[in-house]
Length: 232
Image (cartoon, rainbow, N blue to C red; front, side, top):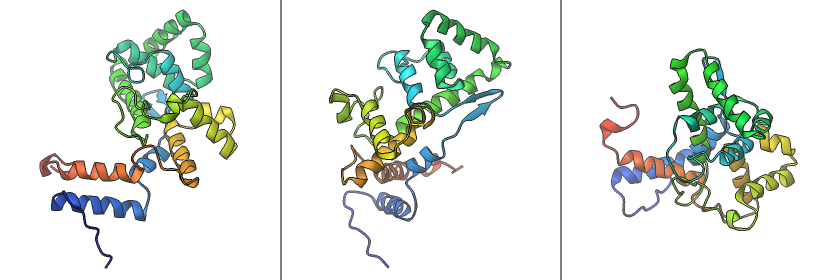
């Protein structure tokens, strides 16, 4: 039997959770990596929402969506824009954004065209989850609540994290700009970027994906048994 590491400063339950999370990652794939590769479009009624791509992120940044640009709370107008962006091809969204007054009308028309208005809250929930799935996969130290990539050193290097990330994938994987910007889910892009840094012997910017699994296991270990997922 392998010797267990000495872990100080934790309760027996927390130590067990740390060891279990580490062992799961050693035997398989960290949960955030699995989640990123399992991302898929989700259909609610007749509306299909895509995983967030780099182009979508840029569009939402341009629209000052409060989940991306600090300040304010998400309102119905922001939810409508998010639904529109994820329900249409990136090229369609870019063309719509070229004319802001027309874009607002297209968003309003899209919402009005949803055949079952009662399904709109569920569509909003799915759209928000697709956006949260991106930020949950960033291995960053102490992510800021409203600006999840603010900590990345590339953001202050005159290029921005986005160009640094895309440029690395163009060079090292040889993928086309269209594929990287419009088709590859942004959450997976972070996976590939982390892999590139590891292949070059560079430390990840902040906790690793295994670290995130350990943090999640610790959080669950600290919850009362009645509040843990799957426990009635």
